Length: 161
Ligand SMILES: C[S@@+](CC[C@H](N)C(=O)[O-])C[C@H]1O[C@@H](n2cnc3c(N)ncnc32)[C@H](O)[C@@H]1O
Image (cartoon, rainbow, N blue to C red; front, top):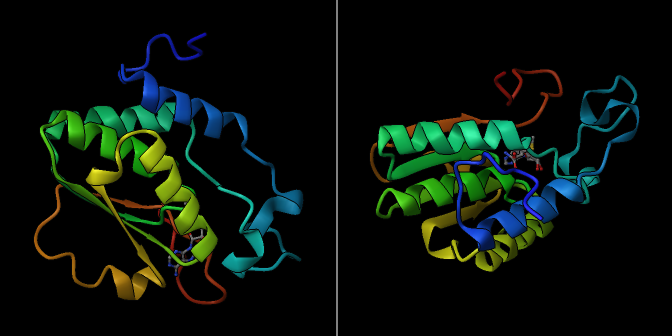
């Protein structure tokens, strides 16, 4: 059954991975890292994706198709939901790369597995570590950037809403 009949993404293999990830979404107790009494350490949330929702991903896909994006960067990747939408758009635009970033190693592995399962591994490079360092050199201009990071301990937030 297709639970997103109006999705702009037509690839069944990609949609199967997206549906599985959307279905496995876990709620974080007490507001997650934004909660007043909870840890801000990303490693404490290795099991939780904090991933974008389908509508947001489909908007990302359409924007990147409209821009004919071939090079994209994202801070951060988590388990790869947003990366899948970017990689699908880039592939459908004729090729290129989404440069992802993630500080929790287990999430990097999961994101890579998800991309491979969707047949999109060739369109993504996930850089492991602190994105404030790993994304310093993007190797050239990019067409689109997603800032979807993390609430700061005391300094500026790494997420832009
Ligand atoms: C909101 S989630 C990203 C969700 C992802 N964009 C998606 O929609 O699929 C934020 C992620 O930022 C990661 N993170 C936090 N601080 C980071 C840092 N300094 N560098 C890289 N990743 C970081 C966390 O581990 C978490 O997985």
